[in-house]
Image (cartoon, rainbow, N blue to C red; front, side, top):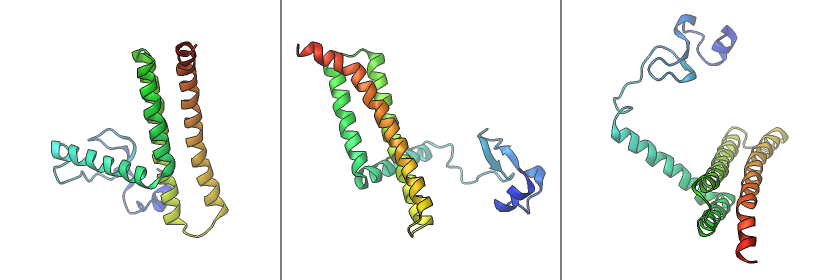
Length: 164
């Protein structure tokens, strides 16, 4: 980390040798570690793990409760999965459908995070903020179009066979 980067990140007072590029206890690359381990004892417990899942599901629930497009994508995903099972797709094909659904929903969550963060940081109208939000929405569009292509490639031929 350069001196300038350390100053901007608020680490100017920490000796350079104490700032590592990965945390020794987790091995997480790219995380700055100042040499002070976490305390509290909950990180390794089952209760801590369950709490983490509870927080994650609460976040997903918030996205689904507040974002119409996320609900639409979830509904379309459920229909695509049901159609995959009904049409007798094999396990690998069903796994591909599930992966596509997960990618679309994950991109919706990330898009929501980007939009909410930008709204917090820049409450007024800004063309730069609008451009960033548009790019974030474009990521959702790209994943949704990819999922649609997967659905068409896997489901359409079987639907045609079923109804012809």
